[in-house]
Image (cartoon, rainbow, N blue to C red; front, side):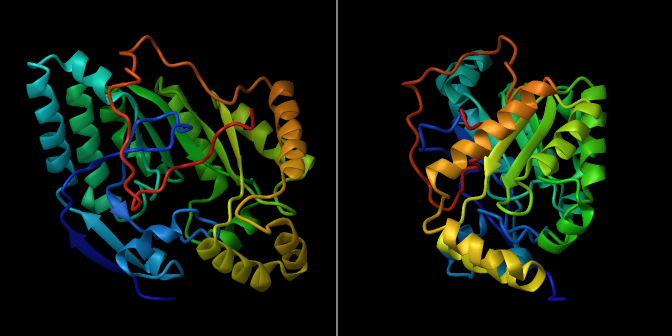
Length: 321
């Protein structure tokens, strides 16, 4: 097993504006670069290439820690508050929704000690900024005290199968699926809007009706407020790494996967069929693909037309609708 290395870096700003108009959030926060969970299909792998690193195992073995993330976030929001003459509701309207964990898992193991994510949450709580969080880790339960004081629109626990052996092979360092579902239950018990990201759905491995139903049933039984599906996306850097994992663990599926992914996305016909399958199951078990947030400050559409920062990936795990 390759040795993990951790590098401390300083960031100029913690919140990065999101350019894609299809994204239902306005800013992203990623306290780390890279992720030790080592998911073979992770869409964020190419973010390491922006720093001249590789998208292969370097992404999971060389982790960058933005040690001043909370301080930089405080400075960003303080400037906004000054322009708004201390009106924090106006700041919240200007900012809109902040997504935490779009290009890394904010609760990967190093967070247990570094606490960069926790400190950022404290800042967002003070400024009453609406936030959504995506993670695979039960470590988020450590921060229940902060989360309960925040304007949380959703906590998205990524889990794409209840098959523990499949998980072990394709995302070797991620928490057990059962632990993730238990995390959903604990979050909901604490009054937080938690659900699952069925992300990504893997063709020929987790896309069958039986596989999807097994997961959706478990999500429902654990009190998930929603289940949001997303099909596998394979940009070139990710495709090479994912196919390598398939050759090692599921060689029979390599030809079909390569035939399906002539580009980053599968054909529209496949996506439509899969979408109908998932929607039917969600309807059967009464799980929506999203939740309606409380009556918090509304985003002013013209206020923050995003300026793209390519080093930050955007999570594309949203409904097929």
